[in-house]
Length: 556
Image (cartoon, rainbow, N blue to C red; front, side, top):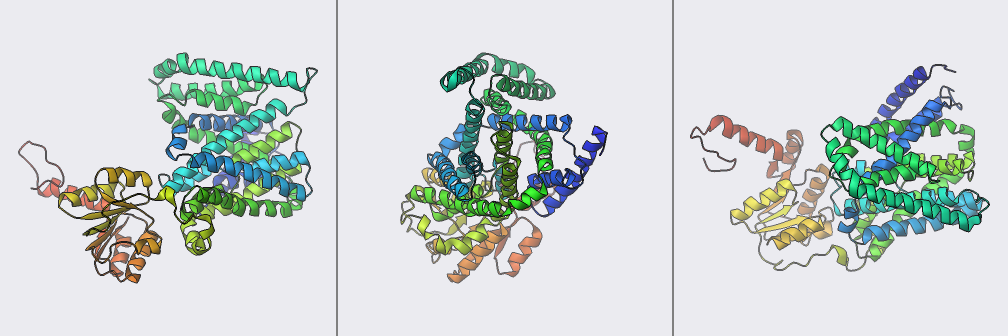
């Protein structure tokens, strides 16, 4: 329809910006908007997008950078810090989802090859989307957040291994037979790994150190390294994705990986736009309509079945139902890797376009619905908690911390040991306050317990847990959590248990603080505002002209 590639790309970007803004208003990931752009601009609707080589090139570059960044961020330390639960949950969910998904696909009349692809596609969740949602909710460092990121890393490793297997053994063997072909592939793979290891050991650290003098040059080298790695993987008989992934791994151990990853994220997201648009443009609305029944069945399995699988594994390992539920919701969608896997299946001649349409439709449904499930996870848990007892042992030993002297008198119960809470706890202890601290991060609980604090692990959103506090002896309950819904629930729970002491609530704004004051809170803390006001008072009203330094909080 449009002869000018430049004009065509301009229209695509304009429509993508508009639909992206709509998705933002609806609080949806941009991947949903980009797929919608492809369908809208593709031949099945407006016919603006033609399958030009330029768009395909941008799409391939986007996928290469996606795998490069995944390899760049491959932090096995995250898996180690959450213990075996990341491996057990990640691998267990992949295995159970694949098996059950395969059986469902066979019952729906799909061929064995298509059933395998669909089943594997259902197992992977979007690391990009999940990390973004957890970051927005400030839950990346929570226990369930760290566990979720841990098994998402496991999933990323598995999907790369699956793509290696498909590209290596998915094509018909030549005259050498399957054994000879397998030996050739393994030899090439070993040679590539040895080359990467030698570069990591002897070349890349020094080279990156020199290039890091110019951030622009460092980023340029990273892009070139990713594309060359993708090309090498393709030439050796693997896929471009595998080569790009190994290129990322090769510089993941250097001190420059964070800087490179941060600079490449925007370029990666921009180029991935063309992959999703290209994919959406290949879909026919008529074929999508014919797949809607199957898509609904698979979507319900992903939205409900995947979280149940994770909850079962984590419950068996001794985690509480709330931790399992919140972590389980992060696997209630399929990822961009599922769509890449489907596209790879078409390239290898294993799949038809209708199967790709089915996987894409499942992706649209599950990503859209699971986004709201994760955003309102705490609300969902409150409604479903009474029915989740099956997923928790009588003693959730993984989340219990042994404490001594829990029956002693306390003056203040402090909720939250973040930066503000930790500083407040230290100042209260210096003033002789008998303090009981509560936090939802087991690592912080262990750390402060070793430092002599009376501290307990727990979730203030569970009324039965709040009931175990020594409320009859505490003069103050202080929440340093700046989440309005959590603070309101804590306030209601304290009133339900007839707490007679004083309550202090942290807030993010003056307006929100006034609402709590009207609800009877004795003290509203606005950490950054209060600190700024105290600093301004000391700077302007109490200037120190003696020439010596003085610190905020020091007696005047």
